[in-house]
Length: 114
Picture 1 (cartoon, rainbow, N blue to C red):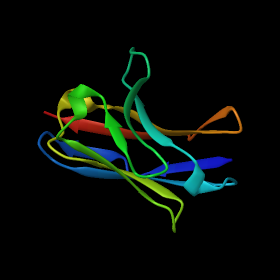
Picture 2 (cartoon, rainbow, N blue to C red; picture 1 turned 180 degrees about the horizontal axis):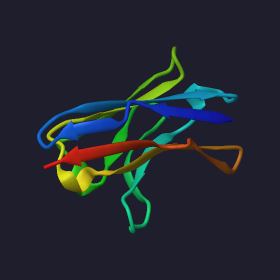
Picture 3 (cartoon, rainbow, N blue to C red; picture 1 turned 90 degrees about the vertical axis):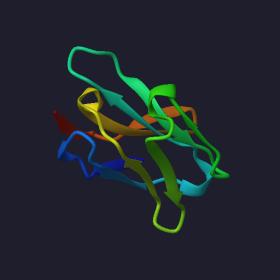
Picture 4 (cartoon, rainbow, N blue to C red; picture 1 turned 180 degrees about the vertical axis):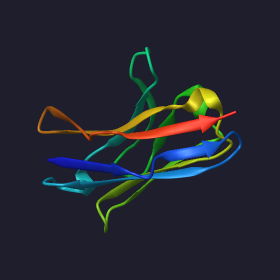
């Protein structure tokens, strides 16, 4: 299983970014996917997850600003991030679990300037 995340970059506070993660080596439609993030000096935290039927869950601080979605035809999970804040600065990772094992993408850096 491989996960390739992209879409990070530098954005001003209040701006938007869209992250994408393309998965391979698994039956994409049968897997729950998630986005995590890790800010400098902080532990990695869950941002959002999306189940096989499209049901999504968000960490409270992201609700109303971030939207997770999946495209089973393109084996892609996306994270639309709006109203970004400097505290959203972090490396963002996509993750899935397949046959009892966790798989992580390499991460994409999001930097939000004030």
